[in-house]
Image 1: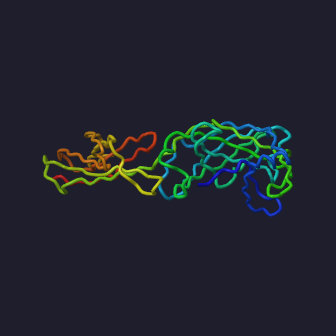
Image 2 (image 1 turned 30 degrees about the horizontal axis):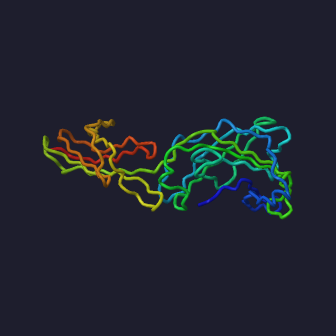
Image 3 (image 1 turned 45 degrees about the vertical axis):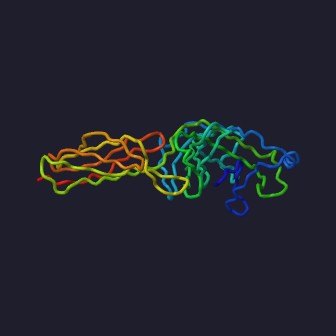
Length: 280
């Protein structure tokens, strides 16, 4: 699992990305000082209200925020950096964090403010999440000014490095992505006879990289008459211990049958693609 560097930098001399944790041991901190509180603050944080995460693909959630700074902070310096991240629980004593793969980009809107844009990048295949992490997360941002200090050097004076982080900027849901199938039949069917629809509701398991049945969930059987665009709910059934769903209805018109799941805080809503049944 990746860990966030409290202070990170790009070497001005080489231009190479050099992420480095500056949480120095106590002895080193005593020798070289500790970072001072940088004169910045963060506001107007925007992120999607929910983020769907599957089992393999990297998910990048765009973020924007306002960075306000004192006149003594040069946000255009080569060794000034800011980024955003998500955390689970209470910051700074959180239980997990979701990071960015690169720093945010900031555009000045005045002499003391800028609009910053970045991403939070989630790597489910790399162990960023456990199933218990599904649900509510909060957003934070940080900024570092190295002020000419070399973060990769052995003689860095930490007392000349400014750092500020701020939590509780916004909230979002990080959800285990869902899937839903349907198969309606027989095809064709005689008018007035029974149509049986079967399917399965499943969701991502972040711990084994597979999709498994989502049990004991209400799932709606819906119908859309051929030539129309709106689905109508016929009945609601409950997924079984394997996530399977089954429902019957009377054949009346040609049209499409599907299952639809409204979602929960941990799992997004999903509807199966409609399965067409010809009624004779």
